[in-house]
Image (tube, rainbow, N blue to C red):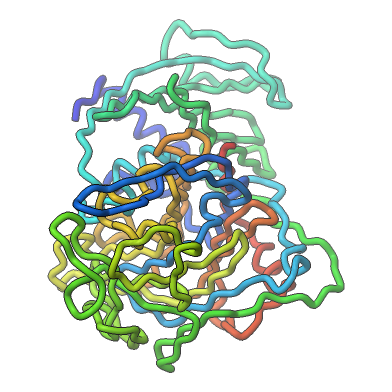
Length: 505
């Protein structure tokens, strides 16, 4: 890796940390603990390369179009857990009617603490490379060059630009203070050259006003359209920019008054302590080892039934026991509905193939803990638990390899993920091509949930097509995963302050 100039690199890192109250750990920035994150404007129209055959060690594909709210995450998706973890409860709900989603509204404000680009996050947390598809964790030949590009944009109080000029010295662009009537935004461009990739340029802008701070991560590569990952932070008092970044809060979700008693109905449930499961199938990637799935020298191990211990395969469907998954052990949840050619598309021959969770509106309630684990003997992803969703076509073909639709953007959503060994921070990222039409679309935040090491955490992951949003919510420990959840209760959950990520169109 080549970085130049070194002096400027150090100064830039220091200014990021100072301005945002963020900490850099193992190449990733972490800013503020939160209990809620909302992704807005999720979904676009496009296409990806769907696998159509895996015969004779040849991976054949064909373009498949998608569109609609949350697309492509509105297709059937699988739910993945990686240890160290104890999965205590999983409940999946569908809206009983349109009125059940009527109270879900987009949030009015934005809460910005994101000091890391999506490109930065993807390339800097290459998880010891076993996960060749999940997060594109291949070892890339990365050459990084930091160049200083300065541009001063003067804005009126309403945010409209009045003029643009190149300053005579770098210092004037970075450190000049704003007047009462004008705000100065400093632009610092970072050029990253990646093997076999076009050269994108990322820029970050700070708007130093007395009562508003805004920050953007923007891809201004000539090969990609402009991409805004996170926008707009407001504060209620006239503080310095460094102070405002730590005190800002978002407007809560608004709800529409309604007399409806509509609810969300549970259609799948797992409880480890009770040893009960309905509507779910537990799988892993150990095909060909214990009576289910398949293995080949071309494609490796396929999906297989997961045994009760969570670490071996099984010959038929089992209920996961009340166990603690060690580091890097992965359990995958699908529905209990077997695939047909029309419902799942192509899938690898000889595997236990089941439909994922379909539709643009679905609710997952999870209870889990992520205890520390430094002695399991894992070679990869040591003490790095994660919970994420994939387009179901990925694991049904080749999750860890190149023969799937992942590389062409069929979708992944990381809900709660540890990025480095032993970290206590759970991050979230949406991996799609939205906003860039390449692998660096989607978005994420450097705010984080606190990892539950000593007790369980209850959380909700709500995919809501009606508002084009995905919500992550830490719930009260008393939350009941009952047969139904009222729309009023969900509206109450969404009333909490949250980090809001606006995905570019």
